[in-house]
Amino acid sequence: MSRATWLPIDMVKTALHKTDRVLLALVLVNVVFGTIILASASAPISVSRFHDPWHYVWHQIVAGVIPGLALMFVLARIDYRRYKKYSFFIFGGALLLMVMVFVPGLSATYGTAKSWLNFGGLSFQPTEFFKIAFILYVSAMLKGDGSKKPGELFFPALFALFLAAAVLIPQPDLGSLILFCAAFIGMVMAAGTPLSYVFFVIVSGVAALYAYAKAAPYRAARLTVFLHPELDPQGIGYQINQAILAIGSGGIFGLGLGHSRQKFSYLPEVINDSIFPIIGEELGFFFAAAYVVLIVAIFLRVLKIARAADDGYGRLITVGIGTWLVAQSFLNIGAMLGLLPLTGLPLPFVSYGGTAMAASLAAVGIVLSVSRTASK
Image 1 (tube, rainbow, N blue to C red):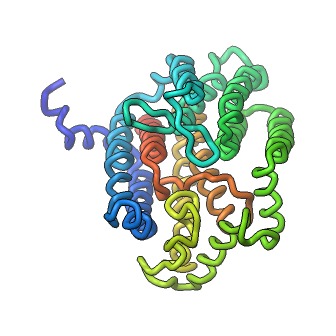
Image 2 (cartoon, rainbow, N blue to C red; image 1 turned 135 degrees about the vertical axis):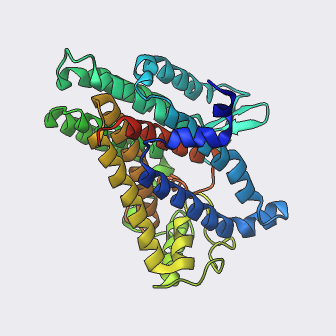
């Protein structure tokens, strides 16, 4: 390989060769839009905590956007079919990182979840990259070697979901567990697994998640507030009521970019899972609806790449990643609109979080790799 091919511009050109530029453009629009919204939403608390209105934005760019874009372009160049051979080791390594969050001295707790690792001052959420490893491994299990029927491949893949649940439930991280279940269902359906198996997963999953939610008082309270948000407006229902107030006050055209009132210490988690209400408050119904259309457009483009994939492994990977991203987006938005219970999930490509941004862009890079070899 010549020295010139190591230059960043040449790497980008190589990565873009035969990739789906429509998907790339849609994702980059999402990232740019998300950075602008984060700049507005984070300004008050950034000034309050760091005396710098740009602190969170710069951290997001340095720790999330830049490494995420680098990962995206690198992974877009790598043939995704290589992952199948090493998927077991990728999944095992990611699972080991998930177990390490329970090791004293390495783990860090934020809020109610112990889901962070600290290495020499560098902190990250292993769950975000565990999602990618899980999708790569389950896709390999469901694809098999062609000698078994989809139904026979189902239970080895289901065991991977049990392992994911085993490390997510003790954290506890109900939101991520729901995403793993959603991605799993999407992949088993794309693999042609009998519908009775899919129905079994859905029914069992809903029952288990309901029991899990009822097992702890704060999770049961979230479920109660979802059904009756007016019961405790100053307590557990405060976040959802403030979110609805923010969206409602934006009206059709919004208060104007940067003119949110709720971001001034009224709306909790304003730069994380509550950032969508800021979109509604500042930009209004039309922009909020347009953003939802953007999410749907990304998902449909991912499905188009999946349908054109040259092999089943690429199709399953693409469906899994697409399901993960769209499910997380709509779980976040649905919770902020009072349509779904609160799960604490960030909005992909918009909410603050370097690990989440980098992992999401890395996942897009894998989809772009599939698009490079897809039949046109």
